[in-house]
Length: 419
Image (tube, rainbow, N blue to C red; front, side, top):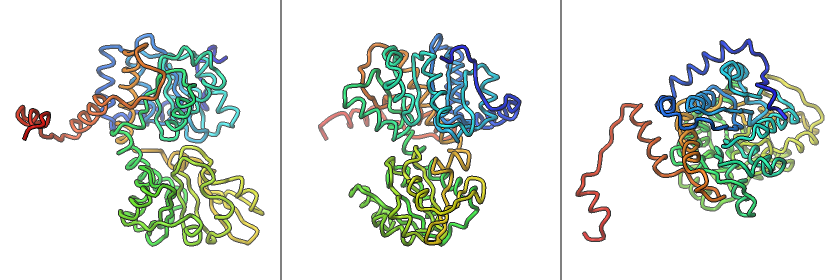
């Protein structure tokens, strides 16, 4: 299924605009550009089929072009039905990338596109959220058995892969790109922090200063959102289930309380946990009239939309990306992006500069998997330390920043037990 099709996008005539968007991103992704130039010369991915399920954005396009420059044949589908930038998808299709993505896919179309990518029988798979990995292990096990290796971009996806490994079901080695220091310390914290606030402001045009913003989850994503919301003048409340993370939030100067209490005082709620039903019926009923609900976790399960639908007597779209729910008690709650990723649905996702490092890790991890084919076990690996360091080194170089180098005497001192 699907190999007879070259691509499926919304409108190929959008390609010229898409090329300009990709060019803009490329100019702000210097690390990936350095890798692309090396890939063009060395062709480390010649003859390799790469199947990718990623947000089809201008930044993803730069990664895909880098892989293609290295000799790969790339099959691409979207990792979210509402995150595709149609002009970018059109531009990639014109470049010969097998892209199957358009904004507004139905659930059936979304999984159909993922199956098209699986049907290409990729040697390497790249995923954002774990839907491709899950599909291969559930529906296309015969394809999974032939995969050389894969990568995963997100915390949520890594959790799903760890579960597969724990149950002895993982069919190929996977590199957890999300766990690279040059990914989660920057992408998750600074990228999501900024782009989530960007998405909320584009959708609502509200003033954050003085409002109570409730951030559910204090992982690296939640930390970034809380930090940026405070920087905009908001009063930030954090909810957590992990006592260590809750203590960190307190020590970082945030108020910490259960969602049952936060629901009564919040003006804006942002979920970033990776779990389901974080905000549900009992919380909706306590909220202020006019409360805004947004999700920054990968899947649209953190805010219970089904509970919201049951409680509402009426709903309508009051602005692009904003659905108003009128409850039986007369209160109005506003859900952004249908509960999906607010930064990608209501804005453009992470800034190119931060995706530069994340996707540099992806490109180098793909190269690593190809070079080490057959040598890795069926388990989840962290990004090799040398790749992490190389990405940081290249990023600093692109910023014109120099750092110190250890002297030989210092190296000897650090490697010895003697004073």
